[in-house]
Length: 217
Image (cartoon, rainbow, N blue to C red; front, side, top):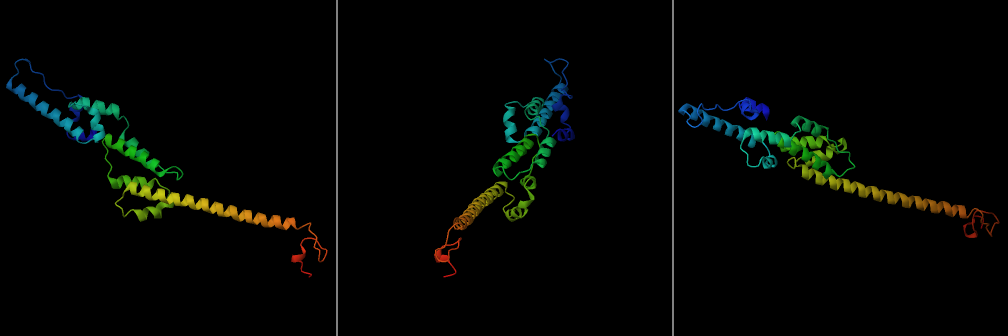
C-alpha cells in the first residue's frame, strides 16, 4: 500500500511530510491561495480514497467517519500492525497434521487471508486454494486432484476431506473389532485344547482326548 501511494505521489499527504500552504491573511486569502487550498483538499480526498478502496470491508469499519488520509493510515497501522509479508510467510508455513479437524485448519488459514486483505494484500481464490492445498500432506494429492474440478473451492474440498477422514476412522474401528474377535476366537480354541490335556479317554486309556474323539475305536 505504501509503495502504491508513493508511486501515486500521495504518500507525502498520508505521512504528513507534505502540508497545505498557509494564507498570509487567513481571513482574506488571495485568489491564488484559495485555489491552492481547493487543490489541496482534492489531493487529500484522493489520498483517502486510494486507501479506502484498497482495503477490505472489515478494515473500513474501523475507520469510523474520518476522511483524513493521515488519520486513516494511523488507525489502520495501529489496528493491523502485522506486515503482509509476515502474514504471507505464516500462510506459506501452515501445515495440517492430519489429526486435527480439517475445518479448524481451514479457519486458521482463512483468518490469515482476511488479515492480509486488511493490510492491503488481496489473494485471489485460486492463489488461496494453492496455499491451502500445499499445506495438506502428500498422501492427499490424488484426492485433491479429483476435487479440483469444483472451481478451486476450499470449503468443498474440506467437506470431502472430512467425509474421507470419517470413513477412514470407521474402517479402523471395524478392522480393530474384527481383529479383536479373531484373537478371542483363537484364544477360545487354545483354551479348549488346554482343557483336554489332562482328560483320559475311556476307550483307549490315553490322555488328551475323549472317547468320541478317539482314533483307536
